[in-house]
Image (tube, rainbow, N blue to C red):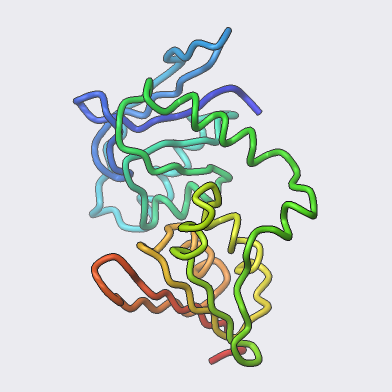
Length: 208
């Protein structure tokens, strides 16, 4: 894995939202120091629709070369989906690169270390309430284990499709769940429980 992280920056030098005008800067690490390796302006035209987003994503992926870690202030929608399909991992962080490059790289390295079975078993999973119907509160899990990401808890389960209905309580809808739902043909419904909680319901084809 190339020691590079790409960041979408606004004019103020902090991260910009994916899809907003900005500059895509690839930072490379050498002898423990990060420096700019290459950069390109990113200006998207929403009027071009999905085809335009796919073209833009292909251009970004080509510019990234072997770099597959992208940091943005927030990410969602078609461009996020296309970059995920291209094999990119997107991080949502507000701030300046100097504040987060080291921690992002450290977490990426940890994510690429195979997890031993005893550790995997320690990560809570969805509970089956009735046959085929599962529930999990990501808020509750992360309240007890803030070191665990929603992907670590749910991605493998969601990808397996071994459920009819999966209800998830979280503080916001993780963008990767939207991507997986679209990719696998799941129905995704959301319900605002309160100002800090959202219930996400995934239904498989067999659960309809």
